Amino acid sequence: MAVGRVEGRACIVTGAGSGIGQATAVRLAEEGGRVVCADVNGDSAKQTADSITATGGIAVSFKVDVSDSAQCDALIAHCVKQFGTVDVVVNSAGVNLPGVFHEVPNSIIDKTLDVNVKGTMYCCRAAIPHMLKQGSGSIVNISSVNGLVSEPFLAVYSASKGAVVMLTRGIALDYAKQGIRCNAICPGWVDTPINHAHAKLLGGLEKVYAEIGNFQPIGRPGESREIAHLALFLASEEASFITGSIISADGGMTAQ
Image 1 (cartoon, one colour):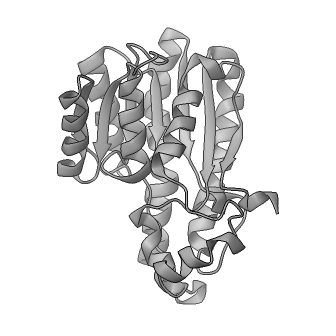
Image 2 (tube, rainbow, N blue to C red; image 1 turned 180 degrees about the vertical axis):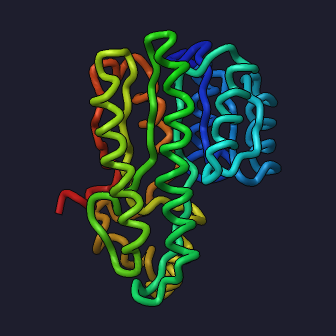
């Protein structure tokens, strides 16, 4: 089963309790990674870690609210305590809180930016000193196709994911000569619960999926594991010449 593309490497995945984060944690473990499954829902994080260890992988769980910088520092410290270092960080934790822009309250703006932007910043900032010590590391930020193009009801979400795109490029440039790579994935519509609130505003999930070919030419939603395959590649040495890249995995959405 395993090829060992991240064999023995210490990996952190935020948002590992569900969706793309969960699939990525599992995929890294399948390829030999030692994984810290981190999520704001500690029970979900533990379930992911338990599912990995049940199949012979190596994983631990950690409850973290990435919008709190001290908790992000603690997450990185936990990985170092468990596995001795930090080799890979996949920032998948995120929220999608859609709404009519002029009606969006401060609380939604703050939460979106705190989790999607600051959370990614905090985790990167905490991990990089450890990567600098060893002269290597790979950071994979999960942005969104909405970091490149927007859709109705997603102005705030799109702004946050666009910030992740530019954060990724900036980090890549800052550390390119020091062995640290930083890339971002921009998934299209993937079949995960994070999209359900947006679907409701668009007329319901059934309607969205019936018409998905109108905006996602491949004609279906993506699967979390399909995004996880790409995250694994970017984390591995197979992507050793790739940094600062923003890679769409969107079923052709941005090709139109």
